[in-house]
Amino acid sequence: MTAIIVSPLARIAEMAVRHRSREMISLIAKEQAFHRPAVISAERHLLLGMNDISFASTGGLVAPQEAHVQAIIDFAKDWDRSAPLLIHCWMGVSRSPAAALIAALAVHPEEDDMTLVRRLRSASPYATPNARLIQIGDEMLQRRGRLVDAIRSIGRGADADGNMPFVLTFGDGAS
Image 1: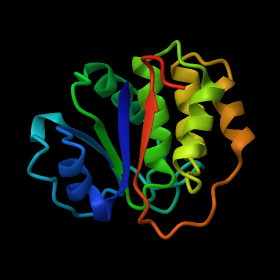
Image 2: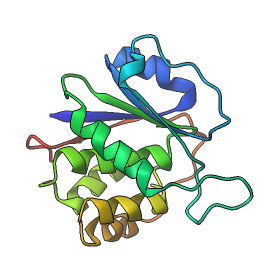
Image 3: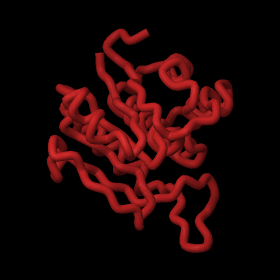
C-alpha cells in the first residue's frame, strides 16, 4: 500500500525518520526558513514557495499556481514509492493535504476521488485542503470536478493547533 505522510513544519524531521521517508515536498511561504531533514536528499526535495491562500495573489502573497501543481504531479510520478513521501506545509492542514491528494491521484489515477477524500478525513479530522490547489489539481488531472466535489462533501476540518501529522494511504487495494 502506498502512503504519504502529511506533517506540519515543526515535525518534519521526526516524521521523516519515523517513516523512513527519503523524498519530500515542501509547500511554504517564500520567506519561511527551515532545515531539510538530513535523511531527505536535496535532489529529492521539492520546495514550492506559496502562501496558504485560495484567491489571486495581492500584496506580495503568492497564490498556488498551475506551475506549482504541475511540479507536484511530476515529482509524485517520479517518486519510487519504496518509502512514504513526506509532504508538509506550515501547519499540515491546508496546502499539504491538498498536495497529498494531488500526488495520490497522479500516481494512482484509477483511485476513486470520494473514497480517497473520505480516507483523508478519517486520517485527519483537521485537514481542510487548500481550495485553489484542489481546483487546479482537479483540472490538471482531468478529474472533471470529482475531486472538488469530494472535498466540498467533507467540509471544513476541525480547528487545529498545527501539531497533528497523519498518514494518507491509497492505491494498491487501499480501502
